[in-house]
Structures are given as structure tokens and as C-alpha cells.
Image 1: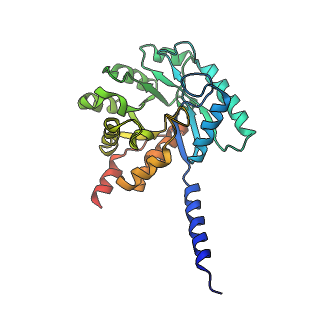
Image 2: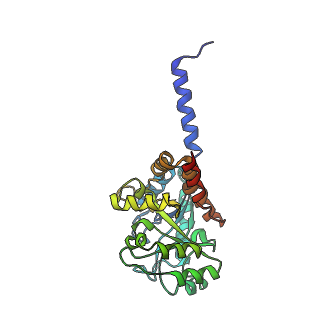
Image 3: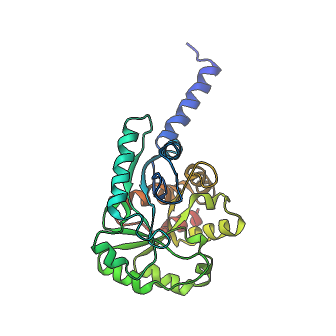
Length: 276
């Protein structure tokens, strides 16, 4: 029996849907906990953001409320863990398929190692392997001594939204030293698609195509101005640099951070794409 053209269209649509379902992203930088920082103010807003994250194809998200800086004393580790537990419990009673794990976006501070030892600030996924560091956007600070001290504790550093740190691109030699001291660069999905302007977009693509950035995250705060754009970023990277690299920076490496595994370098994938 011959199949109709409509049957073939339905099959093609189902095939595309299955492929989309297989894209299980991991997000290591997201402000999704209610009432803790400049993310959602209420549980309803948190649920709306979590639903959007799940619709993006994100399976696991690290909640990273701001710690230190202007949030000094507000979001200590115990409070963040309890907020994550409460949010997961609420999500478990809903139709939102998303797992939230604890973390923090830690403002650079000379006390970081001490505060880690006293369990006042958090590593990513509370795993003790990676910490998400926030640097000033307009003032350059050489954090090599901090990176060295963290590395001596077995902790690798992830620099959040590197593309927004304006002086960073002008310090290639210093940046190279940071990368040699177990630092990694995270860029924001929304930056890659142009949500923060052309200058930030160019910086994001520069860090990615040069092989310096190994992680893409949403850094989402809400469903409007700072919404998740992981799927769009994945598609943009796939079109420009290939699906293997997109999978590496949007799925594989973020998952490795959450699971406490080694981050894989991007340079090899960039070279493979260049050789094609």
C-alpha cells in the first residue's frame, strides 16, 4: 500500500521532533531561584523561567545566585541549598521536567578560598571541582594569584560571561596565563545571537572561534530581557562551526562540569572544522 504525501510529512515532522528531544542541554549559569538576587522575584516567576529552560531542551541547570560583592552575606551556601531543595520539590509536583542543582556566581574576592573552606560560598553543582567567578566588566583585575590558590585546592575556575568583560580581549598574554592555571571561559548564549549588541556578540564569537571559550550557558534571569537562548545559540554555532563543536560547548562540557569531570578543549574541534 502506497503511503500518502501527508503521511510522509508527518513522518518527517516526527523525525525532527525526535532529534530535538535528544538535545539534552546542561546549563551551568542561571539565576532561577526566587527572591535571592536579580533573578525571579517570586516562585511564579521562577516557575516561568524553569518552564522556558525545559522548553529550550535543558535537562539540568545549575542555580547560580550572586555571592559576595553587592550580595555579601545574603546568599550563603546553606540558604542556596535550601532554596534549590524547595524549588526541586515544587518542580516535582509540576509538569516541568528540569533538575536544579546548587551553585553560585561568586564575585572575585581575596577571601574566596577561605570562604570555600568554611562552606559559605558554593562551587558549581556543589561538587568541589569548579567555581564560577564574576569579574568587573570595565576594570581589569589580574586574578592569577587566586587561580593558583584555587588550583592548589583542586578547584578549577570558570570565568562567567567572558565576552562582557571589556578589558579581557586586550590582555591576550594574561588571559593565556589564566587558561594555563586551570581557568575556563564561559560565554553567554544570548550574546552569541546578538541580544546584548554587536560589540558583545563579536567578543563572544572571538572567544569561541579562537578556542579560548569552552562553555556556553544561558545566564538567564527571566523570560523577557534576559531569557534563555541555548537552542538558538546551538543552531548558530552548528551553522558556523559545526555540530560537533556546538555539542561540545552546549552539552558535553557543561555536563562535565556538573559531573566533576575534565573539560575538553575546543581547539581540536575548531581545527577539524577548518580542515573540511
